[in-house]
View 1 (spheres, rainbow, N blue to C red):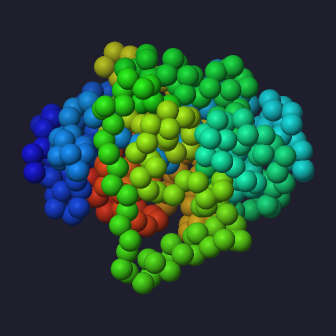
View 2 (cartoon, rainbow, N blue to C red):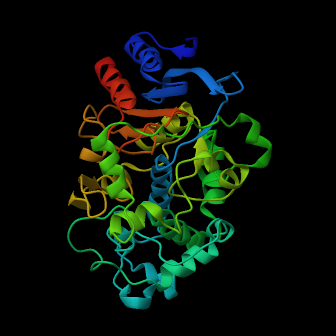
Length: 383
């Protein structure tokens, strides 16, 4: 498999791990590592479109699903740092109608740490409605929480997280989160990452390969449980209205153009690595994006325990996954987010690195993806 790009001396183990991933099913992928504010690894290889035989290029981008949540969290924490958003304020202070149905006590920090009690989006939607923003946030504002907000274990807000946090960003800035990210973060830091992809960039998007049906009875049973109708987990995974299955729809212009701050960010591994590196230090002369106290607050544990939706041990800061949410090889200073299918991005405050891995071959399952774990293991061994 042809692998191209750049590797600094001392980082060859990451290149070796990246090549081996193609032996374990990767079709097209990229990995980026920034260390001490400079690119240490920028590699890409394989096919961006397996059907057409189109190669993955240096400027290829791809949907990263819930890895987008970490990007959304960076936006929110930047607004907290600027004094525009208060983590201890009620969401309803910015969004008055959100107080309906017993949600007056939901704080901004609850929304960021999956404790708002709104993991599932109820009601019936057409795809057009679900992609047009207002119908979904209107529904979330009038829903009742499924448990007392802020109490007990978290419950993964798989898609609702993005609409809630995105609406907070919109109300305090007057911009959609995609526009805010583009102007305040992506442009100053030269990042190839978008929440809401401009149409002229569509030819650069790799074609996703949806997860194949598993023949493993245990995995089949697990996925059946996750999508069982009438359960909180099933309602969360299926909602809204069962519209967002991991299938070919994610290769459509409609899914790329809209703004889903939980799940439809599109970008490159290098952009994610550069973005996260900027949260822990300056990057190639550009100033640090988040001040150290902001990062310390953002990565401090807000919620922990067996997740009410996933049934797995999870730990969240202010929008970021920490501890068991990240691959086992990550150090205690790591914070970030993974995405369905296998993508991953994080920073490590102790190591001074930013990391990004993206791919078009989606693996089925929940938890750490072997491909990203092997890459992280190689990164940590190279420090």
